[in-house]
Length: 472
Ligand SMILES: Cc1cc2nc3c(=O)[nH]c(=O)nc-3n(C[C@H](O)[C@H](O)[C@H](O)COP(=O)(O)OP(=O)(O)OC[C@H]3O[C@@H](n4cnc5c(N)ncnc54)[C@H](O)[C@@H]3O)c2cc1C
Image (cartoon, rainbow, N blue to C red; front, side, top):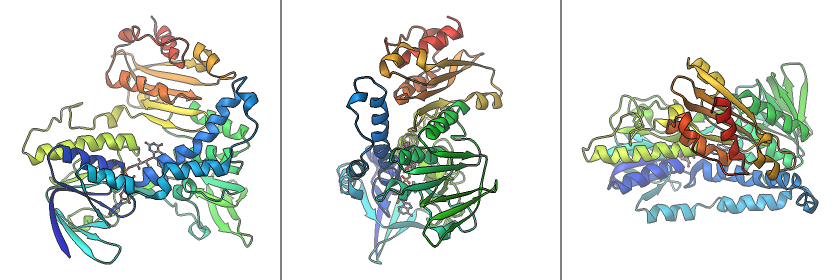
């Protein structure tokens, strides 16, 4: 057993752990990162990257079909084999050598194996060959171990060998039929994807699709899925699951109906990967989400940080990487005995987690949102005006597609006269989102936005329509 000492030990080399390590290294610390699977984490190999690579063929095809001239050139459906091959290239055939090389080039040491804290600032790494390395941290330990799929406690579900997002994004044999349990982001994206592959999809959701965003977004996605031939069942629950002798999955629903499919995908949420990181040895609770302050330090500790999915603030890569930049810098500053800028919107705090989280859902249609919805603003007691606009009415929509359908909503704080939320639904709205994020984070007064002139003819002209509705 060997022992090595560093300023910072990071457990988990997903996108977030990598960024914590990089920023702390840039801040002058010696850093080691521990990874039990692939450097790049869930996002690179079983989540963001493969899912978006797989979804793109269907969205490009739908876009072409809605433009006279291009539509005539489209003669077939999605080529599934070619799409899977493209996915394989995007995930580098599940080989992380290029990401490991990047770590080395950034001056970060990599130790492969399962990391577990054994005492304050001490981590034992169990290697695949049965040997162990002990790592000691002079200043801090950062846990960035992410999440795993939640399997709800439904009788028969585990025995039915359900898919999680890993099997769905890593698919090799596309099933003829697929039941998807859950209508959140993962369930809705996977329903869009497998529908585009010609799979008979059934979505089963307790409430509507995409809870947490404006209701018109989930309704538009449900409509598009239904138009594509999917069976979207909302307001029902699965009570029992079994795999029959023919290998089909049979789901008994709370409304007395039954669904049969070749496979079942469970997309009902995530659990933190903290069950086996040694929290019990340092006074923490194994299996719990790690509660942190805005500098990403675990409450009650002065040496332990939890960054990314594992702290349950926002389960998105870009937001986790934003936290990672703050955490890496803060660890380096504290190690030098320097002053941390922890004022709201200061350099070392992840303030945006509370008020300006952008998210794109790559469904048909796309859903892009940031900040408050109408419901969340009202619940927070903020006096608001809601500005709604039909995206198909802007000039950019008519040049973009022949039958563009979309909707945009801005939420404006009446008292402060600044935007606090925006939602766009429609083809290719993802790139509209960052302007809204800048307006919200910058607290740009509505009057000043009048002078930010959108180009003609683009979808961004919706900003002008919102301002006209606001009253200028
Ligand atoms: C299907 C799907 C699609 C998604 N699409 C998007 C998207 O389009 N955009 C977006 O922003 N977000 C998306 N997400 C969310 C995104 O994947 C996560 O927010 C992101 O991966 C979190 O990064 P992380 O580094 O915190 O954790 P992870 O990416 O989960 O990385 C954690 C790493 O820690 C390692 N690890 C865990 N325990 C240990 C241990 N004890 N010792 C050593 N190593 C350990 C793991 O092997 C893993 O490599 C998606 C999620 C899913 C499931």
